[in-house]
Structures are given as structure tokens and as C-alpha cells.
Image: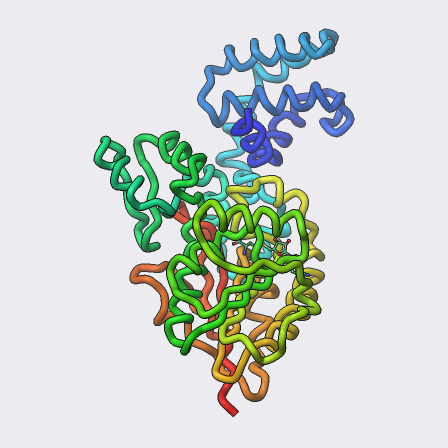
Length: 390
Ligand SMILES: C[S@@+](CC[C@H](N)C(=O)[O-])C[C@H]1O[C@@H](n2cnc3c(N)ncnc32)[C@H](O)[C@@H]1O
């Protein structure tokens, strides 16, 4: 059922366009349960390949079970014709409508990345993300492959695996804490963290927005830190982080802390990681509802908070140390715009040399990298600054 709910949310705009052309009353004025049944029925036929008469009959039965039998005739009549309306949108609709994204987001991506890339990103967002993991228990990975589980490596992210033939087996390994499910772009941030750690003497790591802890757990696995501290604003989420670290065997101290007013010693940390709260526009295939929740002016509000966090985080970095900033947003305002002015006493830390070969990174105007959403990865953006030795 979860896949169906996410699928309806993913295709919401196009579903409503096709259905709204056939209902006598505007879709928004229909009973919410009847509207949901219509959306589900069309989604099953159009996207899941359920034969249209089967999807229609199921929808009619469902609307009756919900006690809305008076709508059964309308549901039947609308769904019998909705498939044709849906298909007509393939040739008549603008890309944003055809691929069910808000117009403003499509226009924003056209300005930032060009029309072709914007359409490609929307296409990616219409397919559910696959399950990628890194192994916490490598002996178990060897045992599973010896037992016949076929694991395929990620095209560019080291240590990231999927199971093309048996995703449920991988899901069981995740449930047993033998593996951790994490998108390869998110894993990449931990790899870059570890690579930066290797450039620093006896590195101390402070991860300011760390919960639920996937990146911290991988970063402490990949590099030996003198000290590793993970902070987050929310105690509940910090508990998740502590549980993640305990399950996966990672060592880091955890502290409730506001990254806008961090209660940590100034100029004392060789690597400060700020994986900031963001609009999440690189992850719309995983969170299809985000595109409808996000208001256009939310980006500016987020960027103002992110800037406050960047400025506070900079205060914590020791001489010669690095601030690594990442988001799962691809919006320039939440990423490169925050780094276009390099403060005196700081230098842009080039990240491209630290990326695994083949990483599909696009250089940003501020010396960072953006990875656009693609079939094998979410969208992410990374920037880094090094405090010069006095
Ligand atoms: C993008 S998520 C971090 C994901 C995490 N790094 C990981 O890999 O699992 C952003 C986190 O920032 C936290 N957060 C939001 N506002 C914050 C603040 N002012 N100070 C510290 N953490 C904050 C949220 O609770 C959330 O856990």
C-alpha cells in the first residue's frame, strides 16, 4: 500500500488533470475519499499496469466499502474514460504537467540547469529509488554472496551495493543491522568527510546536523578520528542517531545542540560538517510529497537559516581546518550562493580531487560540486572552506 500512496503522490498533478476533465464537479469539491479512490484507480491502470477494467472494478468496490455507494456510478464512468485522457497528456501537456511537478519548480530548474537537465531530473523523480546499502557487517556480506545473493556495486560510489534480483534479501540484511540503507550521494558525503579527515593531523570531527546518523556512522567507519562528536537540535532524532551508531558499531559522542548557536569550543575542530536542513529537492523520488508541500518562498527562508548556520559553524573550525557543507537540495540559493563570497582568512577547499572516479559531479560557481538526481543517486551539493593558518 505504501508504494501506491507514494505513487499517487508522485503523479498527483497529472492524475488530477486527467480526472478533473471528466468529473462534473471540480475535483477539489468531491468527497475526499471518493477523490482518493479515483486517483488510486487511475494510478493503478496508468502506472502499475493493472488492466483498466480490473482497476475500475476494484475502485467501484472500494468506494462502496467506504459507504459511498452513491458515487459508484460516477467512479465507474470516470475511470472508464480516464486512461485515454491520461495518455493524451503524453503529447499535449507541458513537461511539468506530463511529469507531475509544480510549474514553479520546473521553471526554477530550467533557469538553474537548462531545460534538458530539468526534464531529465523530473523523469528521474517519477521512478521510485532503488535500495542501496553499505555493509556494516562485511562477514555477513560475504556469507550472503556465498549463499547465492547477487550484489551489484554502485557505478561510482565505493562500498555501495544493491541486489538487482533480490531487494527483499537486502532489506532483511538492513533489518538485521548487517547493512545500512543510504542513498549513494549521501554515502558520498561520508566518503568526502573521511577523505578530508585524512588531510588533517589527528583530526577531530564535529558533525552539527547529524541525526539520524547515516553519514556520521559511515564517516567514523572510514576514518580514525581523534574525537568525533555528533550534534542535532532534536533530542528524539539524536536518540535515533545513538541507536544507529550502537547498531552499526560506530563511536561518536552525541549532543543536543543548535547549529545556529553551537555550544562547542570555538576554533577547536579540525573538521566541522554541516549537513544542513534543506528543501530536499534532490530527493523528490524518495519523498514525492515534498514537491507539493514546498512553497516557492521556502527556499529563501531556508537559505537565510543555512547562512546563519554556516557563519556559526565557521567559528568552530581550527586554523588549517575545514568546514564541509552539504545538502540534499540542488537549489543554488541553498548551496553555492552561500559560498560565493569567501571570507578573509579562508580559502575554497577543492572537492573534485576527493570524489571517487566517475562521480557525475557538476562544478558550482563557488568551487563546490552538485550531483543532480539520476537513476542511481539522489541530488546533493557539497562545498568546503579551509581556514588558513594564521
Ligand atoms: C539533512 S538532516 C541530517 C541528516 C544526517 N546528517 C544523516 O546523514 O543522517 C538535517 C538535520 O538537521 C537537524 N536540524 C534542524 N535544525 C537544526 C539546528 N538549528 N541545529 C542542529 N540541527 C538541526 C534536523 O533535526 C535533522 O536531523
